[in-house]
Image 1: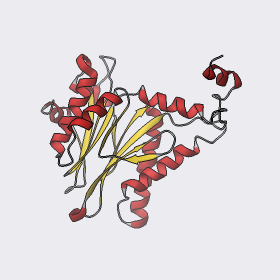
Image 2: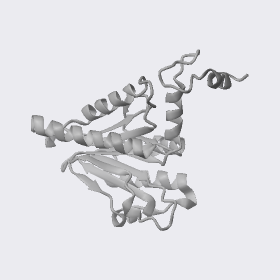
Image 3: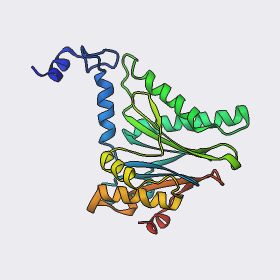
Image 4: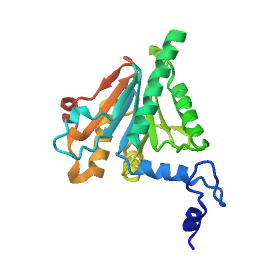
Length: 242
């Protein structure tokens, strides 16, 4: 009997609170596989800001493209996008929006990106050890600008279904993740500006989607260091970059 079959026969994959004999949490591994089946999302840190671009994967012609949202505003200076089970992502992003507002009301100052990320990852981690609950089947990219205007610093974090997080200069999640990262590895430069960051992200998604690429299925946003303001990329804006 194959190891994976024996795990299933013993029930190690039926709960996130039970380790398999070789030290794995199979429910968590399934959650990570779910992320790879989700739509592509890319984050790019630029010298003058940060960019998020994502594929909305509109599969029905009668859906209004503008009604499908993949890039969300967390606060004036923070944006987020997700890949995997988007309903899971929406819940976590709405939680991050509440955290940002609570911080602003309590301390009269905007929250920093990493504080949001840590809290969301704490929630994710808790759901890997609760009986009767499954892990969040979603990875979330948080992007924002921290610090005062003269010291503004763009940030990009990836949160994993396990509850761990990493800071990146540029990264991707979802389908085609490997191919997109290869493009980012070869073409990303630290002195890239926001406009070139958008072009690079669109180029990567276009290569992965191939003939299925359509600008109407792309969602995006950017935040510049000098403004620290969430700017949605409209279809008109995206069209000039494709």
